[in-house]
Length: 153
Image (cartoon, rainbow, N blue to C red; front, side, top):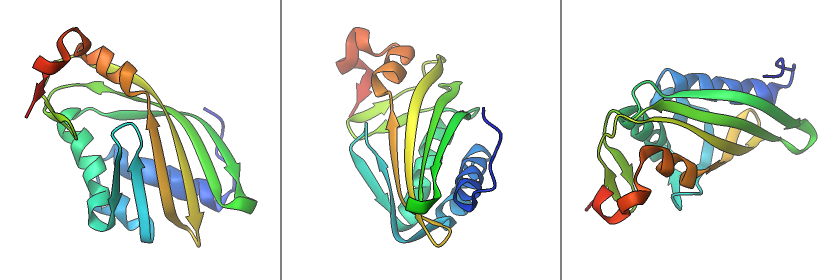
């Protein structure tokens, strides 16, 4: 991972990841501006307000040892944009709630690539677009062999 810069926007985003890492969903949500949102692009769901913290809680429940390995930060302060390349890593030990249903614990480890795009204003996140490689993640969980059986409705 590249050394952190002095960018205030980068500092906010690093703090956001730190709060996710310690599973502080309220602190995570507090870094968003009023009207800000989190878009889980691969799941097709946008979260607003207090629901933003659900994104931390959903993954913490499914992957209690969830770690976000941060690889690269691309910062455009003049546009208030930060892009981060990372990997979601953990062991699937609890139910993973998805819009299509629930995947019960598989005991499988994940190491799924992800790219996050942030827009900020006045030190707060106005949008967070999370592009998780869902096919990689689901493949690592072993659900593609029988996808319909893996989803509980």
